[in-house]
Length: 285
Image (cartoon, rainbow, N blue to C red; front, side):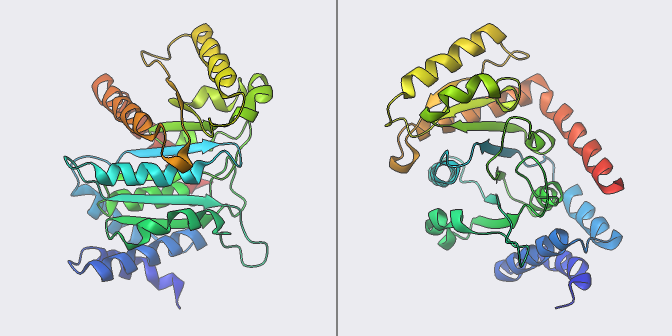
């Protein structure tokens, strides 16, 4: 298809009441962004859609080392958000996967765990390849999150590929950052302390049915006590076994408290201004 023509046409379709056409248009526009066919006309249309929204959509970043169970935790969090009877949110999930060498697309392996949500019309799931992006993100992640915001989703969940201690790209995109570790991370915590752990708003030790989980939790708590609270927010350390849905409700409640903290403290506005600045610099580069 003519990818250069997708974005403007898709943005017009996003305003239609026909849900199937709007979802197809959303997917096509995300493709146009990912492959680099993102022109001024499309950006103006996106701005017009976004201007109609009173509040920007919060972005939850879920990051951590490879094999920590990020996909399983994301799956359970989506289920918990959708089960909330008081406020059933429309959720978009952007899952960044390693890139296929030949096609440049995402490997898609982790999406197997989210098949249950594929039948839910209020959950949109998209896998994107890193395509040389740093920090466990794709080069198109920020623009894709902006589009999902404009498309009317109430929450965007961004799951990164496995990252290391210096890859902190999630800071430029997410309002709340959840760092997932496993009991086997204990020996690496001191190395990671100056890197990825400092970006966390919440720390989750997953797979806590394994030996050594209590030791890792205590080590993290001691480290956070020494560092002190970051600008009024005390980072919680939570234990989960995501595959059995254990401890996920506590993570869900903690995420809600952090978003409330951002709104009441005014920091959410500062983050949005920072995101806008980094997005502009990204486009210029």
